[in-house]
Image (cartoon, rainbow, N blue to C red; front, top):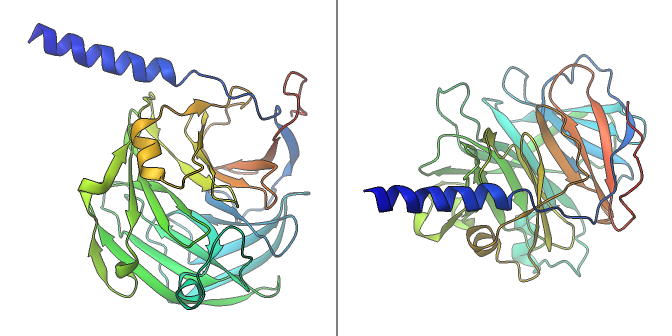
Length: 311
């Protein structure tokens, strides 16, 4: 028994220590603006448009209706509000942006091929305060104009698995979807959402999952986003942002076998759940839950020793 306890302690300590490894590719934060919009007081997901420059799509979590919002990250202003027809916001926790999976069935999608249009994937996977997750992914087309309007649900994927809560969703350049659970200590599970689940209900194959090789002192992670080229994964936790380099696209194996790097230039902003790469992959934005949140930007491939523009 003592040997077993010692082994578990060693594993836990190694994982916790590994989370402090710094990744120096990003600058200190730059403040883009403060979102003074009463409608947006509980943002739980963010995704960057590759059609409209400077635009991100955000949503609130439970308590709001079935809306997504277009925000200009350059000035933190609300641009448009979209009603998602055919969807219910039981507990929306993330939003991902990428090629439309039905289009990829007709013409194979890849990072080197620019799709004719893009889709938004809304993750209704939160625990709703312990009531249990709906575990539904809604797919909608990206709007063609930034005007207040309605966007119909094109398709939905319903799934079941062992995890009661999940706040991280990302989509690959070939329209594969991955979900990550949210657990105390941050030892989250990652799983791929099978294509067979669209238009039906599917049970995830738990044999083909991975557990993050890192520990935290909170319920983590709180959001994720994949770079446009599909090779770099960001995962936001309560106190840090984790970075994975995944050039082979095997995200489950990467999470299962690799200790992520923690971006040391990241400044903690409590309750940050929205994270999104820029369309050019040269940096990322973050935004937190709460009233009047700030939009922060972290640039990639620049010297990170100098101070950023804080508030």
